[in-house]
Length: 180
Image (cartoon, rainbow, N blue to C red):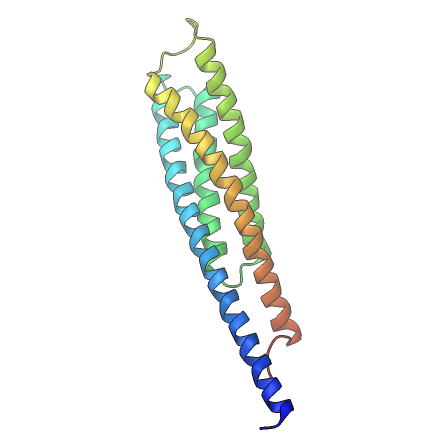
């Protein structure tokens, strides 16, 4: 074997090892995003259920508090759903990523509004408010904080997946990165 052939073989082995390492890294990121997405969907459903409980306590009239919880629950669930679709689909379209971004931003904003609303609700108890059990109030507050952290963290991981999908699209379009 000539020097050129042996050098090329070493470089190809290094390239294959880097490729395998990159694939392992992307699988780990995908698993992480999937776990966060499932957690987001579960929290979204729980917050939605709490919003419905608050709504029933208020006699079916949507108030600022129940509206915040309902919006946050739906946005969190849909963000988790689109997050799973984007993470597990090798070629997520721009529309899917845009939908995820829209629901993620909505759930982050709704979480902040929900935290502020619950803080005010707990701080200013007066006779005009519908009395809710403290367990519901603090659970809503805790879930909004957890949802905010989960969605913010998953946005970072989704950026990594989005970059990888753009790289794959570029390689497929221009035939780069393949030995032809």
